[in-house]
Length: 324
Image (cartoon, rainbow, N blue to C red):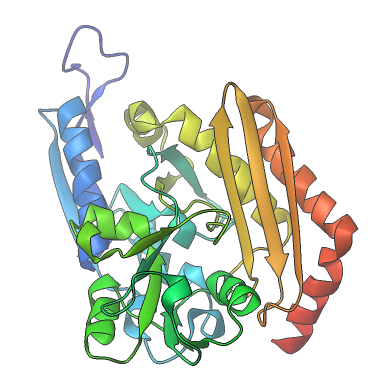
């Protein structure tokens, strides 16, 4: 990121960047996300040259195994981080549900963008909702969280792994490989595919993943210029909610190997966080809730994690480790 000493307007508190390079995966959804941030930055800095560096990550290349078996969510962002370290890019845009709970040393999430619909979506060409599925219907999902929820509530369904980008998953459904698939509603909405959603699963039906529906911008921690330039994009309400969710997940060792949900809302000045951790077969599930001041977001997340541990989550987490 090159920085000019002349602001775009007299009221601008920060120097104007003259060039910003955004690293992005090359899937259609990832590019939409990068282009969205490109557009937002263009509004802030109209004289800035904004470029997108498209990249293919290991997570995009390995599609024949569940993500939980090949190294987890970090496979989708490592190459983007290397590009930033080597000076080829200034920032990367991520769907926050895909960002590991522990950021690598030297990197930070500097801005969290206002959330889209955080819920899971039921997608099917035949059935209008999850309760309409007959026994033995095949449901595809890439998420251990969704799998645990489905197995707990709908034990007569067949849950099968579903990998690939959004278009690939929809194609597999259309080819008849699945009777239904469960996806994040936000991705479908962002790509103009809202009509594919047959039903939105409420948080009571399927508690979202931490960060679901929100975008985060990652930069090198020592890039004060990038952090300052991106600050106006941060949405405080979404950031408080996501920080609580991620702190909750982090305190429970949340990863692709842990079926865990965490979802916070901020209403009337109170932050309310709900969470669960379960076994992958859905037979064990520990749930809880905690509320507090938005400024205490991470403490609320840590507190809820301890509440679940006190209720038996440790035994579930230990069994998950043993079975890996």
